[in-house]
Length: 463
Ligand SMILES: NC(=O)C1=CN([C@@H]2O[C@H](COP(=O)(O)OP(=O)(O)OC[C@H]3O[C@@H](n4cnc5c(N)ncnc54)[C@H](OP(=O)(O)O)[C@@H]3O)[C@@H](O)[C@H]2O)C=CC1
Ligand SMILES: O=C1O[C@H](COP(=O)(O)O)[C@@H](O)[C@H](O)[C@H]1O
Image 1 (cartoon, rainbow, N blue to C red):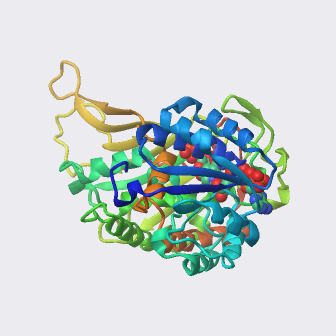
Image 2 (image 1 turned 90 degrees about the vertical axis):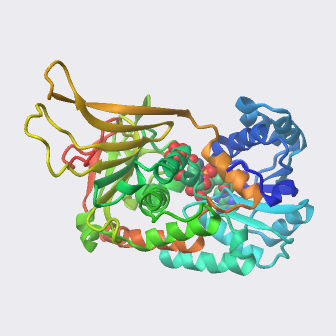
């Protein structure tokens, strides 16, 4: 989404709350550096805000360090000019002071824990917001359907919907954009994109990373709320939506919203439709990990899962009866980050064929982006002998990081790839029954050694 929009030329002050945090350092700043390299004419100033005392020079060093892999004149200029302001986003006086200095259109990016974002929005009620102020809260947006609804009300009391950019960086993942192109711009795919031809869909994001010192955020949240409630359901919605007439903000987000409204738990039963587990000591991602419950900052009483799996049904003419299984977890090997669509068998195969005929499978892989189609083709000297091959397309490394897409949208005032308020609430409506069932211990919490592919007795995914 790096095209020109009306607001390209408008000066934006990007104010990052949580400037000293993990998200800012690892993802936001490197993405901003990349974006400036690709679009040097973007008129953007950067202000870092945190509760710690940091000089502008110390902050500029952090920004330069984060830009190191993506150097450009525009990034250098921004790094030389950026300022740091000590402040607490939950204190109205601090917000007023920081906003008072902003030039052009201020964007308030909440790279802080969700509870802090909510308090900051409450504090903003006592502040006069400059025209065009944009609010960019990170996920998770609320902690259940009701709190998401309340947060939406709070935000909408401050600014209109088109000035709210609920961030879900998976909507900016390049392989998802590849999937959109493959599906909507190819005659061979769109006509077979339905339950008439597709038997099952799996969306999984198995990471080898463990907790990575994020207990303060992750413990008590867990894989269901960290990944499935937001990212994976957004991916599901893009796979399952009706083809929109345009990829404009309204049409695309209407289609995503409608798809989410039709998602239900398989058999409407959170107990049989979901599974959860937690890692025990082992090696994953090149690191030796302790039992999850022994990680620094973890409270075993929270009973946090590090692996979540659930099956959903999309109750539409297109998809009714097709299981969509979503799964994500930490400390898993091998990593598997993919969307897999398995086709139904053919109605008839000529009996003269020899060898096993496998299901066609369409697979999109995250990271080093790729797509493959599994096909049955002729093998060897026998005229009707078959073998299975994968037609692979390697899309390479993304030209733009997911967070660069996010920042591009925010800076240009284009919310096409942001989560609309109704979609944020709907995602909680879908997972709330699972979260409740897990809290009530109606689903056992299984275990898997870090570095394994998950609990040995879980049924295999339809891949
Ligand atoms: N880290 C990641 O990989 C990803 C994170 N996210 C989301 O980004 C958000 C931030 O995550 P992350 O950076 O990991 O979190 P961190 O735990 O690193 O916290 C970010 C910053 O928030 C500030 N903060 C923490 N507590 C308070 C408080 N009580 N009052 C005011 N400020 C506070 C701190 O800044 P200071 O002390 O300087 O004020 C801290 O540096 C979360 O919503 C998370 O879900 C989304 C995608 C990926
Ligand atoms: O939002 C999050 O996403 C990351 C995975 O996304 P990636 O783009 O870094 O692969 C996940 O590790 C993290 O727990 C979650 O908060």
